[in-house]
Image (cartoon, rainbow, N blue to C red; front, side):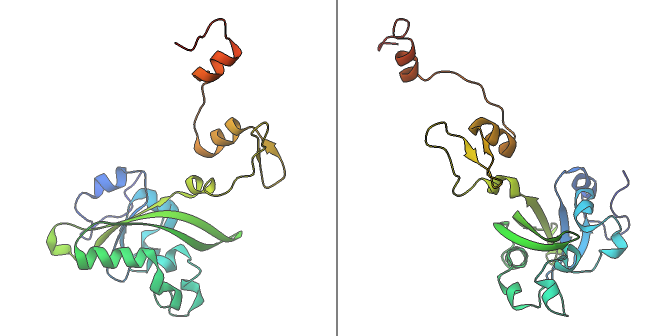
Length: 201
């Protein structure tokens, strides 16, 4: 694959950034995109010329950016933007900032809601203190199972939104990408096989 951008504006270590599988942007204090790695190209679009020097909310089609003609960072809701807050904290404080955020983006199918883990860090060397690394990790799948789940009191099946009941193991496997092995805890082993398992084992 070709690097996402070339030229004198490339940040130090850009080859390493392009090798990482998570979307990484280099932004200024107004969250204008100065660089993005290859993984971020899937999020912001493959043409750097259409992305560079534009504010991230405008490029990502944030609903708040679209709420005002002035775009990203200018709407009332932008005051509470976790991305802008993290970028500002990294520039002012010179430190790494992490926050979780729920963002809404316009997409072809309507409004898409994403849960993001946002990490910002000042770009080194110190001469580039007005630039920040911005990492956007989609944690939507991890947060999907947070909250109340309808579970059968007897068989422990999980009710889906479609009223379909799914075994607990199947549900967790599909949501968390884990596999299960089965065994018996000591109490169940003693109850099911009292001749084999005793209280001392």
